[in-house]
Every structure is written in C-alpha cells, then in structure tokens.
Length: 607
Image (cartoon, rainbow, N blue to C red; front, side, top):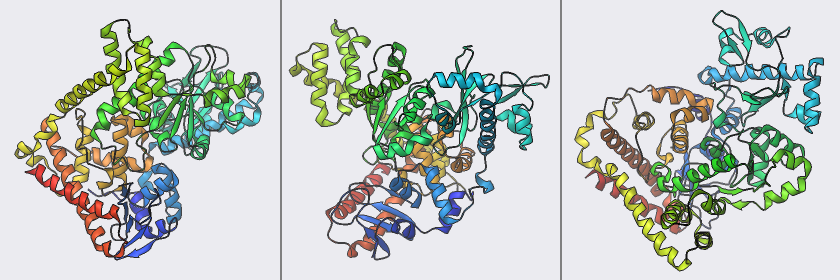
C-alpha cells in the first residue's frame, strides 16, 4: 500500500543528522554518528544516529529510539502533531497540503468563525446581562477575552450564526456537521446553543474543537457541550490545555479540576498549570496528554460523594488494573516511544461543601496550601477502604486486601513499606501478618494472569492454520499487524518484548502507542492528530481473511516476531559497524548480548 503523507514529505526534505546535531554534538562513528545520550546521564556515548536508516537509538539506560519526529517529540516534550508542525515549518512543507485535509480542518475553521460571532454578541448591547453575570463570578474583561468567552443569541438574530457562517463561504453540509446548527425535517434550522455563556474548548494547539455553554437564565441543563464531531470528543480534550501546557512543562505538574470556571479563576490569579476534565472523571486519553507534559498530577475535584467515587474508579483503573493488565502485555521497561511509563498522582482534599472556583476566589493562599498538601493517590485509596468494604468481617478484609494488593506492588519499592503499614492499621491487622497474606495473593494473581495468557503460547503449535492469513506482498507486515490489532476487539495482549520502535513508519508507531493507551478504536480516532488519520484509514481499509480469535493471536504473534527480528538485526548491524569507533562501554557490550539473546528467543519460539 502506498500513501504519500505529510510525514513522508517532511522526512524526504530533512536529514536526521542535521536535526539531532541542532540539539547535541555528534561525532562520526564509522557510517554512523555517536554522542552521549541527551535523555539520561552517562559517561561513555551509547546514543547512535544512523544516516542510512534515518533513525536514532540509545543502547544505554533509555533502551529506545526512533526517527527525527520521535527525537523532536522527546527532546521538546511535544505531542506528535506539534512535532510535525515544527518540522514542517523547517522543511518548508505547507500544512495545507490536501493529503492531510480532513473534515476536522473545516470544523476548526467553522468553530473559530462561530467563536468570533459569539464574542461580538457578548460585547454588544444584547450582552449586558451576560457581562454582568461574568462580573458577578469575578471574571474581568481581560480574562474573558483571553479565554474567548462569548454569548449565543436568545433567538435568531439578524444576522444569525447560520448567516454568518454562510457568508464566510462554509457550505450547508459543513455547518450541519459542526453541530452548531441543526435542521428540522421541514428544512427549517435552529441553533444548538441559545442564550448561553459560550466557552470555546481548544485543543493543545489552540484550535477550537467545540464549545461548552452555561445557561444565564438558570434553565436546565445548566451546562451543555457541542455534541461529538470529528473535531470534538469531550473525553479526549482538556479545557485550558492550550494555555496551560507551557506552565506544566516548566513546573512538571498539572492540576486537574472539573469546570470551566475553576480553570478561569485559577488562571486569572496566576495558577496557569490548571486544566479541567469538564465534569467527568479524567479519561485515558486526557491522562495520555498530561503524561507527555509532566510527571506529577494533582486531582482537585469537588468533594461530593459521586465525584469521589468516580475518582476512585479511575484510580483503580490507572493504579491497580493497569498493573494486572500490564498495558495489554506491553513491556513497561521498554516503554512506549516518548510516552512516560507512569505519572505521580495526588489528590487535593477540598473542604466539604466547597469547590475550586469559590475557594480560589475567596482564599487563594489556602487553595495553594491545599494543593501543596495533596496526598498520594495510593494513600487516598487506602483511606477509602472503610467506605468501599465491610472491614468488620474476615471476608470484607480479604476483599479489601485483594483490591489494594495490586496497588501496593505497583508502587515505588521505597513507598511499599509505608503503604503496608497504613493498610495494616486501616484493617486492624498485625503488620507482621500482612506480608505473607499479600505474597499468597500475589501468587494467585500471577497464576490467574498466566491462565489468561496461555493462548498466546499456542502459536507454534498451530502456525499451519494461519499461514494463509499472513499478508500478501501488497501489504507490509507492519500494516497487517496493526490491522489485526485494531480490528480484533477480543485480543487481550501483545508480546511483552515488542516496542513501537520496531515499526518502520512514524505514523504506525504513533497509532500503536495510542492504541496501547486507549484500547478502543473510537477513542484512538479522536485522540490522533489530523496528520495521522489518513494512515489510520488506510490500515483500517485492509481486508483481513476471516479467521477466529486463536488464529488472529497466532498471526499477530508471527507478525510481531518477524517485525522485531528485522528491527533487531538492523540495529545490530549498525552497532557492530560503528563499534570500533566507540570507547569501551559496558552498555554497548550488554546491548549486543541482549540483542543476541532476544534473537535466539525468537528463533526458539518459532520452533
């Protein structure tokens, strides 16, 4: 399959040696270049750049690599789309090239036009009531303008929003796709938002994906959002991230609140690293964006019972379930390219009956103190045990320990003892008895995990059943593997040793990495940058021969095995060709030994 994309065009115009040498000093090493790895401290260089493969790899502590895009992502702490735009500018490639133009491109433009329309209305004679409301909430005009706040009309104005969009040369179909206007069966049209304060919701790049809206006449529902479109999915965007991400990078911390007003209040008083999940528990897609920016996350959510329960469910998914599932079997030691393996999560315990907005405006110093005193999520979950379980009975304590044991062993080894002591105190158990109980539970968990994954080990016994399912010459192994992974919804795991770096194309690495983070095709589609969506569509268009679940797993294992083997051999060749130019390095020697060992394992698995 062949699709010339924006990524291909950028990489055809730029050389990885030029890009990397713009950040670090490279020295010739045979046909390659070497340097101390810029992503960890080391005495002897283990970082190799290959002009032939247009790739880089750290053979030291990082044990990862990629191409010029992944290097810029990692070096600049950027998302894929941001790195593409930076490199496109350097390469002189137009971002308006038709290959990446999708429906969402038009939607962003429509939303921008609508935002200007709403903003003009807010500062017109019709907007006095709305302006008075914002003033009563402590929002000054400068802040309102910086967030692009606006007002939707109470009734069809002249000109109306529809007339405004038509006059800006958007078609009727495009306008209806934006969900800002709906059309009745009789052909008449109506505004989706009426008489509401409008909050443009921007992605990290500052493009308006949709709107949040609050009623000013106290009609219900109080808050509504743009319905889901190609440009907007509430679960994959964070309000305020466009202005907060630089502060997150600088401070290495993000603060997540629930509402628009919470964010605006914080930013107005100088806490710029605050974003909102917009009334829901933080999602995997939102968490993924924050992981790429910082290592510390504070959840400062409303202290009501429902909010705390939603937070607990999400923490269970992040801190406990992910430990058992091991990211669908993905090896966390290798890690996904660019993405962090974990993020330190803390909970800000707000006073009962308060919310961030009121607290920030009434006592900003107290708010900052509460943020500093936030407790680790693990402690928050341990403290929740008496609420979630009946701890007066033996069965209740057993259920609590089974639930919390995964969290303890997924924690930093230096924190484990402290958490164990806290659990023992909470459950009124002698701490000396806790370790044996937890170890026994851990054994049962491992046995259960092995049983769940036994189907993975059956590929060598039934390869003859899937030989015909492997791709023909028109479809690469990379494409075929991704097609199986994305289309086989019942798959539970992937080989533990496989890294995204093994894929040849940047887009495939990003799709694979995002898939590991989301696990759902719809979430994947909404979280990908526009420049990758044509490649995703191309992969999803691959026609797979009908095979059952076991055959899918066997085919996938064969593909991953062959892809990994090819990747390792190319790395090995590059390393050996440059080895004489390197100082003696235990990291490099160990890397060669590990690659040889892994290649033997691959051959042994094939029988």
